[in-house]
Image 1: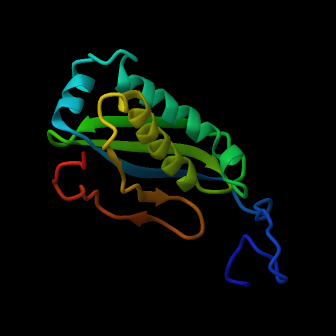
Image 2: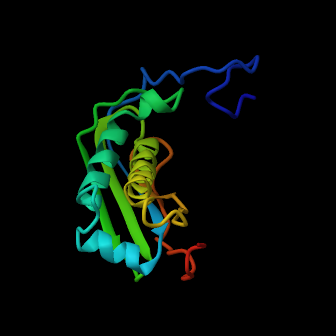
Image 3: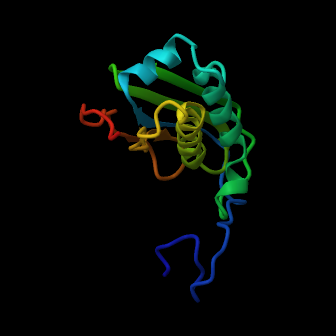
Length: 168
């Protein structure tokens, strides 16, 4: 179990001690996708859904979720984030792309905060649109990049899911 930092030698869960680490500038970028019927995406873009502006509510939900990540993921450290941004952009007539960028200067990374932001934003889109399209599909969600810390930088390109209609 020694390779898994969230477990001690006996296998008990633990929060990693980051007290001796240096503060460094860190950021993480993550993405998620929501596949829906073309009519649903048009309703979102035209702001014609009864629940309001789906993209702005999802953006706020993602920002709030990033700030609450340590309340949701048991062994995450509470972090003083310096910036959280989300972009929600139509990729095609059936795909909505959600991307987060989370930053801080601190002792541990913000990958989980970036992933939580896009995941909750995608869930919020579903929640606000489920009355008109229960067949929406969420994901994949994944880390696109991170910088800072001892493990160095990580980058992978954004890749949209295959273009296909959601199940009805």
